[in-house]
Amino acid sequence: MSLFVAVTGGTGSGKTTLAGSLSARLGADLSVLSLDDLVIGRAALAAAGRTVVDWDDPALWRWDDLRAHLADLKAGRPTVVDARSRESRAAGFRERRVVPRKTVLLVGHLALHDAAVARSFDVRVYLDLPEEELIRRRLGRPPAAENREPYLTRTLLPAHRRLVVPQRARATHVVDATGPPEAVADAVAAIIRAAS
Image (cartoon, rainbow, N blue to C red):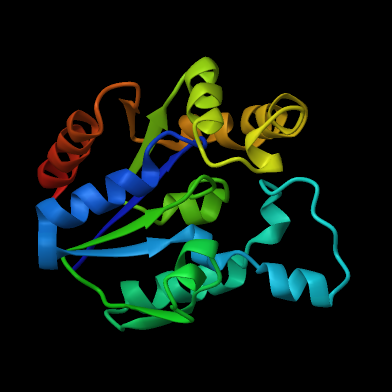
């Protein structure tokens, strides 16, 4: 039976880096499901004539698809994700096959947003990052409107406070994300090993 782990935290808290580090540490014992792949997708939004002003809006994610993927994995069945994240599309992936392994990891800034989904995880990790560091890291990203002012203080921070911070209360473990990425990965890997 698989151990189900969810990792959440604000933008720049190191969720993607952590997933890669955990993959390196746990190897074939880990499957990763990225919540970013379950975004509705820019093409679908454009086709529907929707203009997005807040990319953190939970309505932009395919929650029913997430529930179905988790149900498949919990039943021991592989699942195929219609991968719509910018990262997957840029890498040439339209689909990602996720197979149940010893540990199944969901990673995303809204991974614990839905209470019922959150309860379905054995281990729930919140990567804690002060707002000042969150902004500093976001400003270090490539130039884009969503990485600059006024988006950061007018849209991103209010969404972070409203949607991400409350997930801390659903976490079984809170990890300081201000440290070096390897130290964060060591801490989370130790949590997973202890729960296995």
